[in-house]
Amino acid sequence: MRRVTYSMGVSLDGYVVGPDGTFDWTAIDEEISRLVIDEIRDVGVHLLGRRLYETMLYWETADQDPSLDDSMREWAAIWNPLPKVVFSTTLSAVRGHARLATGSLAEEIHRLKAEPGEGDIAIGGATLAAEAAGAGLIDEYLMRVYPVLVGGGLPFFAHQGHRVDLELLESRRLVSGIVHLRYRVRRTST
Image (cartoon, rainbow, N blue to C red; front, side, top):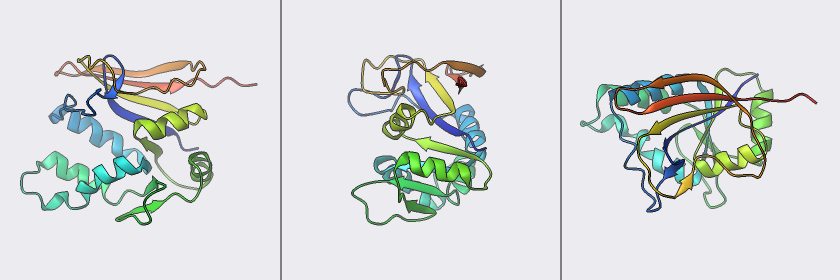
């Protein structure tokens, strides 16, 4: 069965964006580029909220940007044909290999898990991930922990008032001081 993953850069104090709404501390270097390219190769469909979808529209034409380096061109070549499901109450249409969600997040995830298909079901964006986490739908958390304290903002982990036990699957310290962590949610059988 397909896994549901949530991957983001996060400050050491647990935020994906700071109190000012920026994430300029998540600079992409060659090592991070390789890491996110390797992650996206494992994805079969990507779920996005409206804000992230609109941010990622840049990649629809990124291959025309002469300043783009080879690794970002490689990422764009994988990202563009990747099927995407956009959750929005304000958009009436989406572009590229995206479609608007027709059901709730839980309904879409259950349907995608039941369908034959390769690759993970990736969730992009902390707000959408918070909803999935609250419903117990995330199987793995992938974090790139940046050595910065931003003091507030949008948290990586949703505080849903219940405990979630995790199992560390991978940890790697990058040259830049960023730490990559991969955790699996421990499911208890009842």
